[in-house]
Length: 291
Image (cartoon, rainbow, N blue to C red; front, side):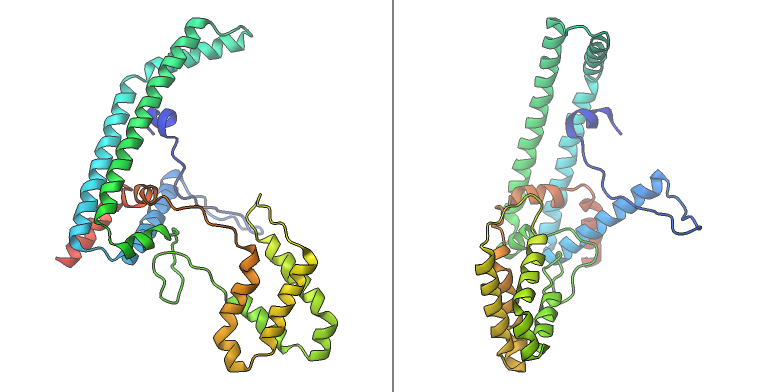
C-alpha cells in the first residue's frame, strides 16, 4: 500500500472472508492474497449487477471507460505528488512522538510545521474531490432518466433478488404477508382472546427493526388499535381479495415505522461505482461481446 493512502485517502478494506472453526475440524485459513482476490471478485460481481441493470448503450460504456481512466490518472497524479513530500510529515510526526513521549510540550516550530503539512494535504484532498465531482457530473449528463433512477436506488449485492429486479436488493414483504395469512387462519374466538397481544408483538417486532439510534415516538395504545384495524380488515377479505391486497396491507402496517429517506447524491453514487477503476475492464469486456 502506498504511504499516501494512509495520509490522504484511508480507503476502507474492500471485501472480507470470514473463516471460523466448527467442532474439532478446523477450516483452512485464507492468506492475504486470497482475501484480496475474494474482495475484488465480489466487487466485480456487484458492479456487473449494476451494469446489467443500467443497460448502457455502447456509446455510454465508452464514455464511462474514458472518464474512469481520467479519474485513475488524476488519482495517480495526486498520489505521486504527495509521495514526493512524504518525508516531511514522517519527520514531523516522529518529532512530535518523541516530544510527547518525554512528556514535554510541543514547540511552536513543530506546531507550525504540522499545520503547514496538514494544510497542503487538505488542499490536495479538496482538489481531488473537486475533480471527482466534475467528472461525475459529466457522466451524469450522458445517463438517461431511468438509468439515473436505477443508479440512485442501487444497493451493492452479489445475488440480485428474484422477481425481475436486477440492479440491487429490494424489499421483500413475503414474510410479513405470511404472518397476515396466519392471522387470517386463527379461529374467531381465539383471535378475539389474543388480538391485542398479537398486535402488541407486531409493534415490538417493527420497533426492533428500526435503524440503530433512531427515535420514533408512538402512542402504544393508539398503535395497537391501528394495527388491529388492519388485521381485522385482512381477516374480513375473501381469499381472492386478500391475495390482491396483502402487499398493501403490509405497507399499511409498516407505514408508521418508515423514516424519511435522506436525499441521494447522484454524483457520489457515480463516483463510487461508475468511476471505480475496476469497472474499466468489465466495460471493455462487455463492449467486446457486443461488437
